[in-house]
Amino acid sequence: MQISLTITPSKAPLIFPFHQPISQAPKPQRTSLQTLSNPVNSLKASSPYLSAVGRAIEDDEYRIARNQVLRKGVDLEGYSIEGVSIGGHETCIIIPEFKCAFDIGRCPSRAIHQNFLFITHAHLDHIGGLPMYVASRGLYSLKPPTVFVPPCIKDDVEKLMDIHRTMGNVELDLDLVALDVGETYELRNNLVVRPFRTQHAIPSQGYVIYSVRKKLKKQYMHLKGKQIEKVKKSGVEITDTILSPEVAFTGDTTSEYMLDPRNADALRAKILITEATFLDEGFSIENARQHGHTHINEIIENAQWIRNKAVLLTHFSSRYHLEDIRQAVTRLQSKVSAKVVPLTEGFKSMHA
Image 1 (cartoon, rainbow, N blue to C red):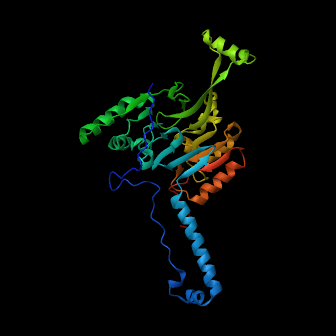
Image 2: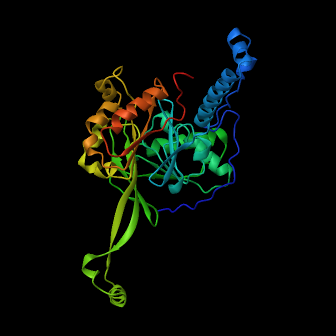
Image 3: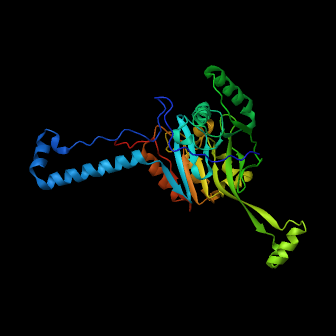
């Protein structure tokens, strides 16, 4: 077991010119309506009322666009969840409170400061940034990260890191942990993680992070403080360890995980972060399953099993616009009591 200490640099410098933080998009240019030369704008310029309306529309559009550019994540159930997840392009979900990231995508800059990395499977849009992640932490003199992978890919990941060590003549230090479904790893004294089984086109697994607390056993609840202390000193275990699922992350998977009784904790965690690659009838449920993904209609069909307080939908296909995503969220929200939120960083409006 390894416990990682949190060491946070003041700011992460860019390593290569092409390695830009995913949330930093160019600032929209504001163009005054009055500078455009056509009869309509001439009319607006000559009318104080029309000019004021034009400015109001322009300012509102600018505000919306700016908010989309600056938005880095969502706040759910006391956790700040950041990241990007676009089907086939990149997925990296960050939870700063746990100092962890789920999958690494193209290694967004703000993922570098997370001590723990959970890899769900070996597709490049989920693991491609791993060498950069490890190298960047070394560059900033951060402690080597702990990287969790499915046991079946550990050897290949070690080979991958060796190749980069040789090609770049660099040290790439990490603690690579093969964590299998059903095993438990202690992240810190009040936090543990367990993988759970998912179904994708290649071997995959999700992860549930649990908070840990001690609770006095029922048979000792009637005792007073000194009596409890006496029993404790005698060597008797007087508490039970209570694990509470906080966050579950599926990675890429079909909806079958929702029907597996062994995955019950994933569906009762405070937050479920799950994929919803396909949202419309243009791609059938059967096609989604063949590609190892989930259709939003399947989540709706299995909504009765969702006991989470919040559901964060991710991994939408790049074919969709913000309007498509919001419409799908509304459909699911009507079927569940959990708060449903989409992670839409990187997606644009059809009107953009």
